[in-house]
Image (tube, rainbow, N blue to C red; front, side):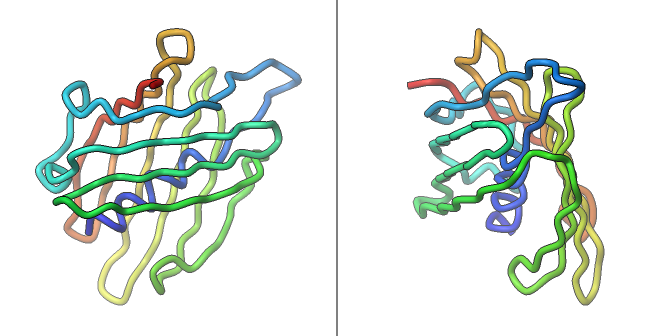
Length: 157
């Protein structure tokens, strides 16, 4: 369950874009999870630490995320183009459809997937704070018995 959530969380960071030529925030940088500032649901309470490295160069973004949950690291790297199109993939043997869009200066990721017994969705809103020093990710997960809300805070080293 933690692996599903972590993969979905990473997907959000894989998209960014520009609207009508407006300059959008650059999410590039290395940050560490501020566990005390984060508000995690009981399902994610085992997450102890994490790191996030983002290389954002419009129109592409590369995200390397490592979270340590219950003393076990989970690591993933994803690369995406930032044009907002829907991407269909198979993750952990299940089909998913995801998209990324800008909402002002926030980056919003949405994904939906289905398995043999249920359907689920995930939405994460990423915002830069403190002049880009902090990334706050507000995550909503629904379906498949995994309903939860998390607020992740990653800060520059």
